[in-house]
Image 1 (cartoon, helix red, strand yellow):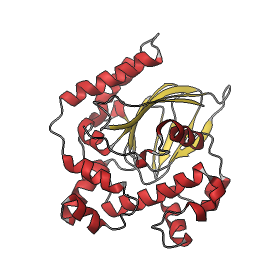
Image 2 (cartoon, rainbow, N blue to C red):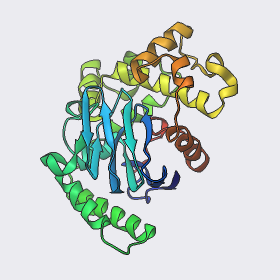
Image 3 (spheres, one colour):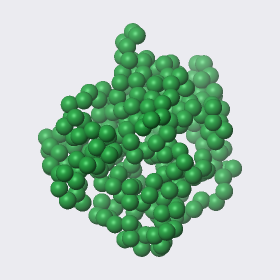
Length: 286
């Protein structure tokens, strides 16, 4: 696997984590199998083999323009030789470029060509499929597409970025404190989180805590799970329960499983961007 990360331009960075181009070559007739960790929403456009994907009880295969909603479960996939572009979509990006309640699409994988809410992304997929275009030319097409779409959108809600910033505070243990620091009552916080982030504030804080620990372990396995645990975990059994909820397996099973794509992806992302997973990316100011 070869992956190249591109930072969004300054005028788009508040909407996205990264743009990235990936080439996968498992050999003639081969398939690579792996799973993605819980993350924010994403768009992936494939040229070559299209993936077979499953999250929870929902499956998709054969789609070249795939949208994933925000997730709290692993997305399992298998894929052959292919090249694809990926776009990590932050909550403000979801509100701007999708504009649908995020909780209605949480833990889903969607064929953008078959669902009206995402049909505009199919036009981008068609443009990227034009022959004889280099990577930089395709990146320019992606940036132009989102700039054009942003001009059609309504005024941004600053509460989305405020909530997002609070989620990145590693010492923030409770929803009540999060709401207070955002200047919101808890009922409003709950509504905004479900609408724009896909989940309740309590689950979002749990996911952040878990992903901080997982990223620390992947980047330095010598720590062991105990050494990688986030400071907000009460004990190891607390972490094991979260691992089962968010990855569908115990930590020991995760270590024993093969991860030919995601571990290398995380380490390269950390090297290039300084953040191993997109849930730990900070929202940028507009």
